[in-house]
Amino acid sequence: MHILIVEDDLDTREILSELLQMQGHVIVTASEAQHALDILRQPSAIDLLITDVSLPGMSGIELAKMSKAIQPSIGIMVCSGYGEQHCEALPFPVEWSQKPLEMDAFLAAIERFSGTRQ
Amino acid sequence: MSIVADTVLFDQLRNEVINRVMPGLRHKMLGKLQPITLLSHVLSRKVHAGSADAAYVQTQVDEIKLNAKILTNATQNLFTWIAQESPFQLPADELVSECLELLKMECYTNNLIITNHVSTRQMLPAQEARVLLCAGIILMIDKQGTEKKLQIRAEGDSIQFSWNKACAGTDTSNTGLLSNWDWATNISEQCEIVHSDVDAQFNFKTALSEKEDAR
Image (cartoon, rainbow over all chains, first blue to last red; front, top):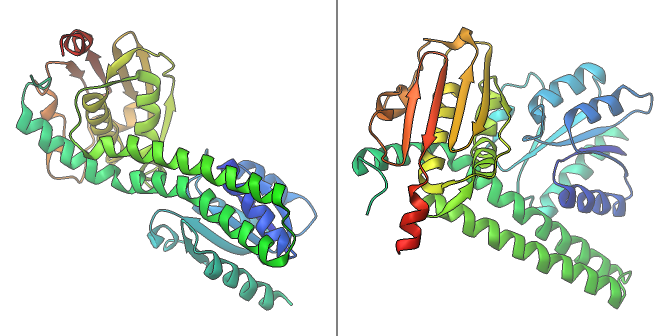
């Protein structure tokens, strides 16, 4: 599965990327929303967007909306230390994960999503 | 000796501000915890898979120790928001950045765009500046205008907020001290607050350093 990770914390972004590569996924990363949108506008399809809510320049919630407009079939996973209420205004379903991530549950959610793509 | 003119009023304002920044404090603390949980999970998986040699394990352990130290420092700093600490000082640019970081999510959800021009390292009384500056930002966040823009600048001991005229005079839905600027008059001996419909100026005095020397 092709996964785009959008996370402004360098350590978190790199380790999360390493972990998901170990799971056999192809990972692309961005540190802010605008870069993520540039990636999504390129021809290679991304299956899943994993985004933090709190990002420089644009929130992860806005990014999720714009990502769906660019790639309607993309799956969205929102990770945040804030509450889930920020996702409630979104007009499409998203997977939400509380930070700090509970890793087994987080990986299980990704594998569930991966299963729906096959 | 208190550095605030009205201790009861300042404590009430501080309580209201802390309630508002609490989600930001929590987010900042948990953000520092995340690399530790991820590093330990990756290390555990590699050890179980037999793909981690001693050098790799040592590197990961060093990373975990470094991140634990970062978490400890961040936690100690954040607890100074909640605990009543002795007066201490922080540079103006760090104070403003910290206040904006803690209220970032509120700014997003309330369509407030903030441009921060503060780069001065002028030392300011941290406890007081945090509360007063956050109270000013919260007043802007809660304004009813749809296109809300706030500029923050600093010069010497003074920090200035100015906002677009679309927000001038519009009400907030808040009750309590954070519904208006009434608290700003005479709340502090350390900071004079001058405000109008379109701007506010926080003029800090440098007397704190003399008090610090006297302690």
